[in-house]
Amino acid sequence: MTPTALPLLLALALAAGAARAEPDEAALNQAKGYPIGSTATWYTEPYRVGSWSALDKVPGIQTRIVARAPEASPLPRAANPAPIAYRYKGAGYTLADYLDRQRTTGLIVLKNGEIIAEHYGYGRKDDARFLSFSMAKSVTSLLIGKAVSLGLIASLDDPAEKYAKDLAGSPYGATTVRQLLRMSSGLTFTERYDGKDDISRFSRATSGAPGGGKPVDVLRSITDRHSPAGEKFVYASAESDVLGRVLAGATGKNMAQLSTEWLWQPMGAEHDAFWRISVDGQEQAYGAFNASLRDWARLGQLLANDGRAIDKNTGKPGAQQVVPLDYLLDATDPARQPPAFRPRTATRYFGYGYQFWLAPFKARTFAMQGIYGQTVYAQPSTGIVMAMTSVWESPSGQQNVQPYEERDALWRGVLQSLGGDLTAP
Image 1 (cartoon, rainbow, N blue to C red):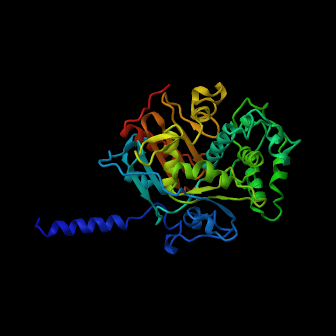
Image 2: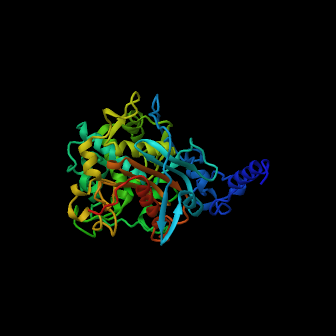
Image 3: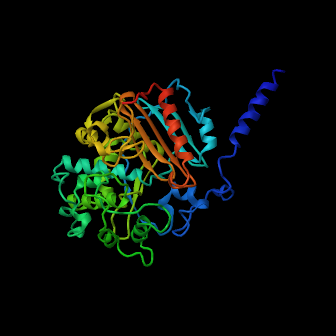
């Protein structure tokens, strides 16, 4: 090979890499630059990439700002990051392979607060604010923990109606805050994502769709039971919405104010975040918090640091306790859960804490998860965090389990590659 041929080959390789196709980019409307949709189209495939990374730009959708910190906490890049590899169905893959195989809009991996890998897909950039879907439930939980530590919620065993007055005399109103945190009201709220279930009915009400009714009226209409309260985990987004109404009633402030004062600014967020709000002015606590990828990673790192903020002078966890430690452990430690809520009992794999998913490892490992592939994983003892935003085709593994299986295989690979702990309990 001549001396001049090598630079040419490298340039061609780089050009080919830059032009590589991303999964299903035609279906996701790459030809039109991933446009933002309308209130009628923002959820559909051709508008997902654009809308789910800028929901506040969708005409007709109302949002409320969560202000960034005056100074962002440090998030340095690792000097010599270890390569990440994983195995799935007997084959070995790299992180680049994963991005070629799955519809990923953003992926970031941290080790001890340093960036090991960071990627944006489908033309997204680091200032995009990604829709979290049910990762928002975990944010709601953290605000509940702070309200309890300040005495604004007297006890997790108080009934919701003590604070959410509009629910007084209803079954959800009689459910305790702790039972709502564990999604154990025992009330039957269907969540199949088929357009005919209770979550669809509730979503129509919160968005103000014609004939949707009022959100509180939908909540009050849920009266059938599958179990006694407190005994069994059954996923129900309505229970997270009730928690949001408890917060508003207990504090006299909206969730955007609370998120700014209690979480986003103390954490050192780099970008403004925002909540989507319901037609009645209540933040959609069950699935509508939007934040940049790096700030999702910062939130994961905050939790991996057991709720302590990063000291800007040292770059290490400092003395400021943003999330109350005892509450955080109650929310994320499988050993602190009643037997029915532990891993491999609450579900076939995960346990469920206070709006967090608990992995079946000896080392405390937990996740925030939302439909269509939104995730923050954290393993505090090894300092490993992974945050991911996605535009998967199906909302949950009930429709197509493959992306969910491969995401979990990637997380296991991240742990293995970076010195994490996969030991079974």
